[in-house]
Image 1 (cartoon, rainbow over the protein chains, first blue to last red):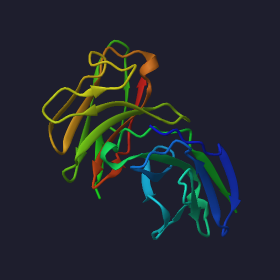
Image 2 (spheres, chains in turn cyan, orange):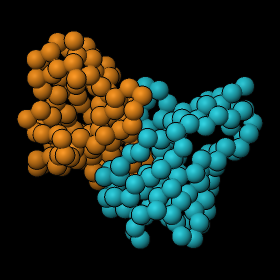
Image 3 (cartoon, helix red, strand yellow):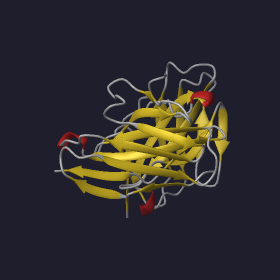
Image 4 (tube, rainbow over the protein chains, first blue to last red):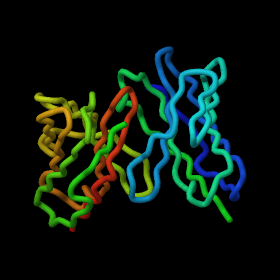
Length: 111
Length: 112
């Protein structure tokens, strides 16, 4: 299982775009990259998943370079409610659930 | 998507007793899992709950301590047996649907 490395914490201000980068140098050919958001006292919530290039949904974008050894979660115009821990996971879709949770990135959005 | 609920949401238990946590999914999921999360820390996978057969445990977790059942595609239970204060943690249920993993809200367990 590919190990992931993320910054432990990040600070931002309301209205800014936030980019959180995750390194996964040992990603396998059939691995997907998935990001989760977790608020205190709640379970992780799925944000976005991708395999290569760029994926966008209503809450975030995921940028994956050609070598797939890293990925960047982009949160546009963050608000105070985006303060949470963000986890990057790498694993095969057929092995979903076996992906190892890293330490995550604690994002603090300030007014 | 799948919505996952857990019962109880929290409990305070005496050492030496056991607690069974229930996990219900609103739709059929391919796989179900149980995780543990210490306050302020990341998630650790305890086991994969297999329908109709014994769960598959990760290193450091054993069936005698964490017996798991999964009688059908939408329900699973995790029992924390012979509890000690070190078992105080948040226990989360998870299910996989269309290659996406969903999580329950967690059960906060405090052992005195």
